[in-house]
Image (cartoon, rainbow, N blue to C red; front, side):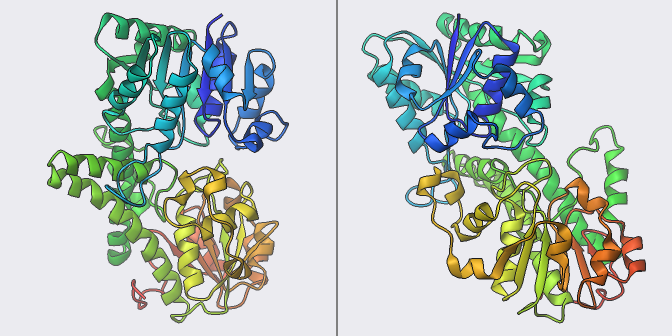
Length: 481
């Protein structure tokens, strides 16, 4: 039996290993993590992350050939293939601060693998890492090998949260990068044989190490660039009276462009897009490519602009102040069908509203009040560190933020509603009931274009929807407060 160990039981490691265990019953898969709380969650009936279909996969395999453990050293020592899926946060100090990836946890994992290994191993990069990371990890392992031979592979993940299990069952592609040596090719084949048990051969791409590492950064940069492009157009649509949904539909009909990732919104979030683009910017700067770095930096700037533009629209529309006014925030996760709040636009929007002394009431079907408090109290990039290194909640801030049991409770006695996540349930709410319970004039600021604007205006709402023709109330209001 081939034995696989994955270091890191997070959003990537947990679901990926669960699907490998399901599809490869002859392989023993162990996911290890130093966090006892997280491992206890994976061994419970309430998993530590929400992902449609994940519960069923784990339930089928756990205790059979899928195990979750805090005995990191023992299982790494026993494994034939070691996946490393640890945090690679953006550096907050020192060389490359604010852009470069902090590889502290990766280096610690590599040194631990070298310390405990007694047999040859294939070490697989699963975390998103800078180009040439494999080379650095290889040096650590080789210089501490004590006769053990290692092959380093890059196997980046291309999962979309909310559809991760579906993406793992039927991936667009599986990318494996390795050394172009006999030993490297043998290691690539060993990992390819794992995926080949359910992924068609033509969807398994093999490359050299550096191409695989860069492909992950480039893919996320391209996707984020599309979102920032349509968001930039959304600002122009509001200024001219065009409808961004119609523009995006028309543009997406061009076969060379396609319709995906052309939905205007309050901005992109998630653990990868911003971090990977900043990493790409830093790499470009290091290789003497300032024009290329500047191009990708603008993708981040447009995203930040979109979030601040949304907050400015809220404040300026409500008589240029939200001080003491209750604002209902519907949705805090960075997208629907996940409980993930990493880099969610809702953080910046809520901080902007709180900075103007608003009283914020939040409802999200998958995000807890504790997580919201932590997110609002954290400094930039703190979220990508282990939980015990994250700051505690700010009690003063917590007084301005409340969690509601449902959307109606959030909106009761509110002056405005901000929709920040495209949860399906927000499309079918009883907005008349909501309107009747709010102060007048009642505002809805739709940051995800999920509501029927015409119907809400008939009810009596003043409606702002990203990139849509402006409500008469808003036409004379400045876009910047």
